[in-house]
Amino acid sequence: MAASMELRCWGGDWGLPSVHTDSLIVLAYAKFSGVKLTVTPIDWTWKTLTGTVPELVFQASTVTEPAQILNFLRKQRFNADYELSARQGADTMAYIALLEEKLRPALLHTFWVDAENYASLTRPWFASRSPFPLNFLVPGHHANTALSRILLTKAESPLNTITEVEGKIYSEAKECLNLLSHRLGTAYYFFGNTPCSLDAFVFGFVAPLHKANLPSSPLQNHLRQLANLQRFCDHILNAHFSTHPGSPQPVEETVDANLQKLTQLVNKESNLIEKMDDNLRSSPQHKPLRSDPRPSRDNDQSSTPA
Image 1 (spheres, rainbow, N blue to C red):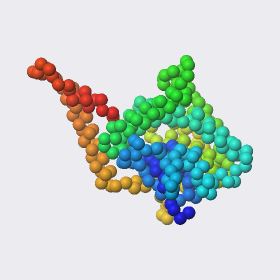
Image 2: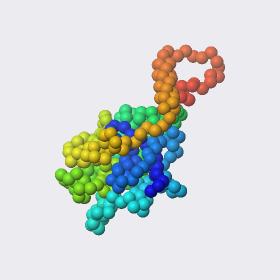
Image 3: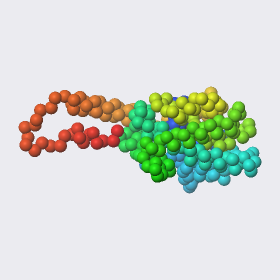
Image 4: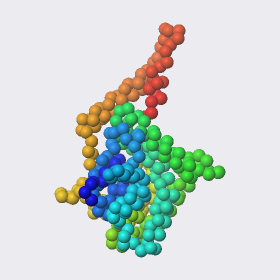
């Protein structure tokens, strides 16, 4: 193809080309099928709040959602599944449905709902990759979306709250990982010697859980017991996303350096202001002389999304 395809997605960290599950799926499939992509991270742009990622742009077409993007690429003759039999194709669809139903809710809970993981890893990472003032809004927006999705898909009587649903989603996720581990066995890929769309989906779901430094995660602890799934992720990273000279690079932080520095500076200043406010609130307070005191600025700032 003469024209280049552009993929807009979240940038990389933790040794991954992207920290975003759906973005990882498309990036991996592109590597497997030989698609040459121009990768544009949305980091430090307004799309961190308003954009839908991953987003594939080619000529007059714009496609979102991994399944739709993969179908679009197949129509452009980039098909990583062309060697699969009809039975293997059916198994691929079944396992992808299993990932969506059983593993995705637990991943959403692990990264976005678990209070310790959210405060220590997820919120700081996404806030640091969002421009001011979106750094205050983006993490909370995605956390609320994740919580709503979990409750919408998993909450049913008598399990109506996230605390009641938590045990169920982690039990199902561990069962899903066990099934994937059993199906993979000692092989490098799920079907034969070449990767296919199922490998892309499993990599996108499992790799963040494998590589993220999570302070609290029973699901990650369970994955640590499944050595073949860990080896599977490491093999794909080494074989398809290596940074050896002359090979394609993973997602580059192709954003304006000055904007990045400015955003980081504003984030530091915001943190400093929050600390000053905390010190002020903890210091002795005297009753104001005004009979109709104005509302405290502390209240205004404490309502600002973190």
